[in-house]
Image 1 (tube, rainbow, N blue to C red):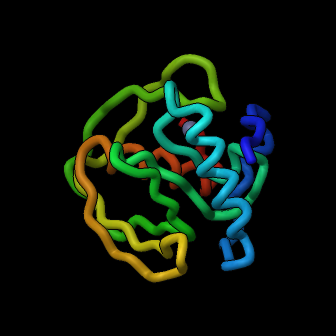
Image 2: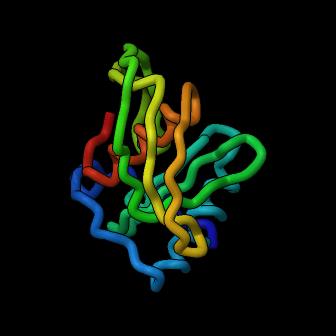
Length: 136
Ligand SMILES: [Zn+2]
């Protein structure tokens, strides 16, 4: 189901709780909502559809990937950049890392550990910030 994008900053500043297997409905709604907004959105956190659960979806070009309880376990090569967000107007300056390694549970709850670089790594960092209640 395509959900409305939350723009309430007070809600978005709240931390997400750990996701469980029972949150599969939220995963499906995130996939649907990202698809509906794909012209101007490359990733989404559950907070943005009003669910305080640690789930993000990332557009990896060829497919949209769900990450339950993602944790960035290493990061290197910081750089300054400017980002926009579907929940905010305009763009803001932020520091990101070129290379990251992430641990997460995929949509079937298999534990994954992956390295990402560049653009995809940047999206993951932005969405993980949302889960911590951090908005750029
Ligand atoms: Zn955002």
